[in-house]
Length: 497
Image (cartoon, rainbow, N blue to C red):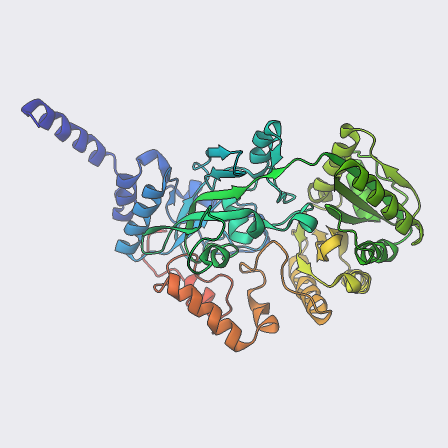
């Protein structure tokens, strides 16, 4: 380095140092990223202190926007130096509180890592970054004759990294499976800053299936920085059927009968009368407003097989008192039906300004009984409920709509939500189909798992994160966790927040 270069470097270093934060933690983060990609002001950080759930936590510490695995690694090293917790964040569209900071952790927002890196049509694999929006990947693949199968209702905004964290599903996962089925490899930054790969593109990757353990871990084992996803070919033929019923019970019985007949449609979605009414007000989609319930059924495959299955589904529905049966005749009609279904949650604002979207899974044979109990529970507690759910696999999404400004209402909503969990578990169900545990269902984990089960889950977590540094206070309940949610939320006096 000559004299001129040394002077230039000193000037550059001075300018960078002059504009660094007065806070040492933030200054070190700015050095490994840059000033514009580290948010420090309280007003900025408040935006990253909530997700789409109704739960409260702490407040985001400095918010970082990395562009590469190396930068995520550098952030983890800074966090280790200052003994600060870290929480990864995608689009913030989660509903279980998984992205809510507890205390004042460093937030690593992955939304700027949003590139589709490679499309390998021959091997039907795509490498993508975690900030890629779910729907954008399928939109990119469609002209090539492929798509990415998992399609959460929030697919217009949710990221693939968030989908990996929660093992997300969606309406079309009945036949195709959820995220775990369609992710074959992950590049991950571990809590100690190491970069590694779980899984692989080989038919039989060697070693333990740490890929499978990592998917659905809700950001508690490490941070995803690259994802290899499986590409699904677009079907040759699709038939979308809207079937109305006098009651939700008849719709639920039809679902069980279709599966029992040996037919597994691509999707089977159920909506009750109140849901139909608000959808038609919000996004007119051709749903019969006088129906007690509807099923939206989609069959995919070769044309002959699709026609046979569609006719058989209609026959089974007629045997269960179906009313109107409408088969979409054009792609426009099909898109309208699905737009109505996927806008149902937003449409709930016609009834009240706030909603709590629940997520449990029950055996298909118990669908009708559980729905009756859930509706009775809401009525007894003077709460409005909409039922819209993945009927084919028993994944319930009771939607409690309310006004949080009405005194005592939110507490009543939480009480009813807890009772819905109990009803589902008593019916032989489980806590979550796709939203995850987060802080929402943490306290109910002991009702589903034994103490030994929970201890082994914690051993897995501590094997990855012995210092309990990433997303602490989530998933595992107090007594079986490396962190106590109450302790985390007590920010020590004098701590920068």
